[in-house]
Length: 139
Image (cartoon, rainbow, N blue to C red; front, side, top):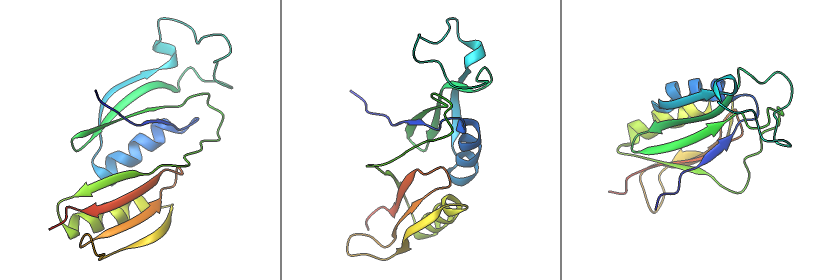
């Protein structure tokens, strides 16, 4: 069994994917636009506005993990509450690099610092509203 996060960017999925490519080295494994779907959206689940170029489904790899993402209903109002993506890296230098990159345009909620459980830990909300926890592998 596998659990993978599925993020709904509500119209900003492509922008988010490009951001994560730069910030955390994400690599796209699959990307399908609504126009490429063999079937129209299910009645009642149609995205808002001009959605044909929007992303119906994508998956991208960050390290050993896969994140799925979509433009969803293309509402322009994404909401990521009640969870964080936790990114564990191998060194303090890597933690700093990834933390700083994800923080661009976002908000730091806990600066990256030494804690009782690891040499680097910090929390932030990126510019898309996704909450992140960055930490190094405990030594």
